[in-house]
Length: 308
View (cartoon, rainbow, N blue to C red):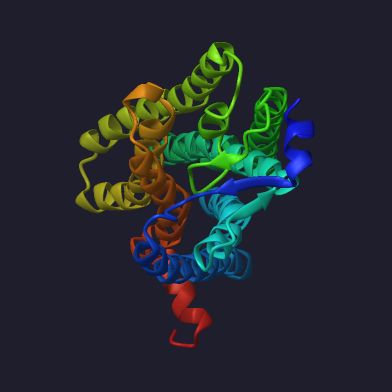
């Protein structure tokens, strides 16, 4: 079992960009800035949504959970990445690698489902406005959020247990920046066809089913907006949906490019940069997309800093 192999040398070596020291120095500075912005932006959303009564709505309730996921994901990967970038020591303990794998899979799976739930919330708000308070009752929202988290955590547990059963036969050098299922499978000394197929099927299920629900929701929203006679009503509907759509494109675009393609078709540096994109850049942009394109959030921010 991998746990014996890994524990015999204490963990893994994450190579990252070790052959390009100048690039590592540049990335270290950039990632520090992005991580600080991620912490600031997502914590600001959580605080604002709790403090401002105008933001006590289902949309911001789910946005709080999205921010929590981004904070958990980046905190599970970025500190270790920064440690590895700042010097020659590029190791990660076996427990740290498994923990990083579990948290990143859990947050990614949960975010897939949450984005679909947020799309349904927007559909109900635009297409069933008179029934919105009943259909999206706080109790219903809490149940949806709990189901989303439990599904993501359970799915990640299955994935993590399966990968820890794959024999590595003493291999401990990971040519990547994070501990992820595809790169760990490359270390296996046995046939991993089953694991690769299982990963592909689970990824397809968790990515494509919520994405289909999102597309259906926004198709209905587009039809409802098209039928609106009021220009103000159209603007309001588009304003509440545009931020979510941008986040969906960012998240699903990078996730599908990473997990729904043949292994042979990827190039190692491309995989590393793609991991940095969806693991660091996207969680940084999410809070700014929502705050800069949202009147209520900007109003709450002005009120908090005393300009309103």
